[in-house]
Image 1 (cartoon, rainbow, N blue to C red):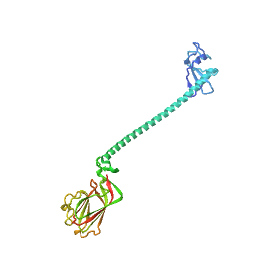
Image 2: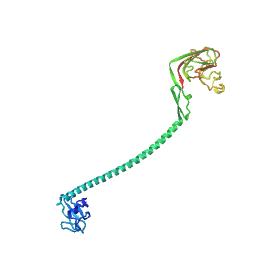
Image 3: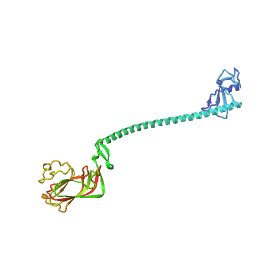
Image 4: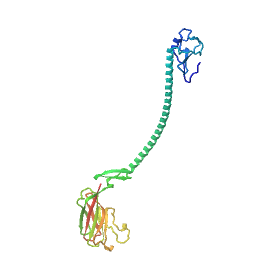
Length: 310
């Protein structure tokens, strides 16, 4: 036998070999009787008899005997075509194996990516749970509410119980409003400033000027529920207020003091009290009282800078 190139040995079941070598009962006539060897050189093939019980043309009858088939163009062409086709199949098989290896590596990589995605999804779920918990906490301690006049409020720690009474918005007047009121002595009255009354405002921001005809110590109360005459000064220096004040001091009133009497000084030219936030009644008016006035006349003067509204 001629040396066989690696990976070139082919066992081919060719019925055409029977036609070439004869078809008698004593001759090799079936596909199982022959093997073809391609030696890799110039188109040259060797035929090996595989079945020792048959006789083949060319004078050989034993297994392993070679015969040169290049003298037969038909078989040579078929064998050459078969060998080329087989080599092509081998190349394709190698490519397929290489592709399978690449696919295996890709699948392995995808498995790793899927594992990473799974871990990321788990972390995202934990983050979402944390955010949901935080949002629940924020909702518990923060409540928002829209109020008349285009304002809104955020109340902390109210668990959704925010109300417009918790907050009102200051609006500055383009032109401040001036209003004055003359009094004859001690009194408790309601004052209504034009442009403020009936507007739904909750308070005004005003500069207040006060003057009296005598050096008469008196406490001025301005606001909501301030008309009652309540003792709100001390009869002796340094005394405890609650031992001398009348009950009911917890009113929505701004308190201003005009000095006199035993204070040993008083404002001869009058006195300004700047930036006073004066609570209004529901109708837009406010109360004015001057407890301690001993019947001395005077004036109270307002410059309204702005108003508060829900």
